[in-house]
Image (cartoon, rainbow, N blue to C red):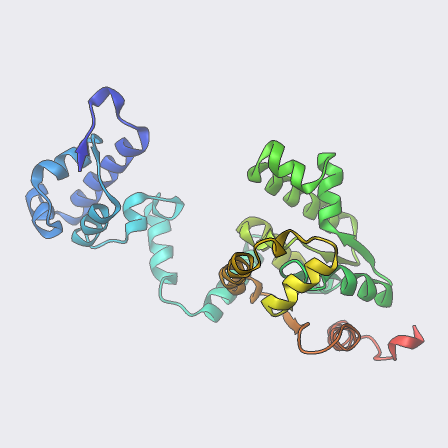
Length: 301
């Protein structure tokens, strides 16, 4: 662990040092005892607590284990900012996914942020990676139900006054996420009955995705990675094909990383299991059952 001159201390290191010292005091441990349990010298631990020690992540892990806390608690976030947060986190820490989902919904209802059930089912949000069929299936579903159709990417471009790629290039990802959240909130506010095709990366922002889950009946349009890539290429975007092996590997990693979030949707429809027409009929039937609408043939609409 390297020591920094006091006048060059980074604010994060100073805050980290204070947190290590506070945790040690809370546990009633001496610096010598923590250093011994962590396998570091007392001097290194003293540098860390004073904010002059730039420790490696492995050293921090050893210190966290010595203090019998998680690395996240040592580094600090909102859930470590007060005793109440710590107690809530401890209460939720070993719960199953289904139990956590129930807790999230109940908290939303308690604080008035959870939309009413009737209003929620009349707003349908389609989530999934690009090439899942959100636009084509969403437009047909909206027409069948007599709902408005909103392609969120186009609304984002209207807010920004430029294309999605230009938003990222000119203003960065954080700005794009702000436009995305604003476009979603406006769609929810304006349309009581709507089908929304969301961008594939929307689930990357927990606050925005939580807004979708709270106010919309959410459908995950699933597809095999090969189908995602083939459909994107069929739309005229051949960039992923330039290095197909690397692109496919990246696509699989993205899908794996987002799958647990997509799985929070109320309904999942596998668009790779049948052709577009059969997929639409399946999704239409399931949505009409949720809305308690008659299952008349689509051709009769």
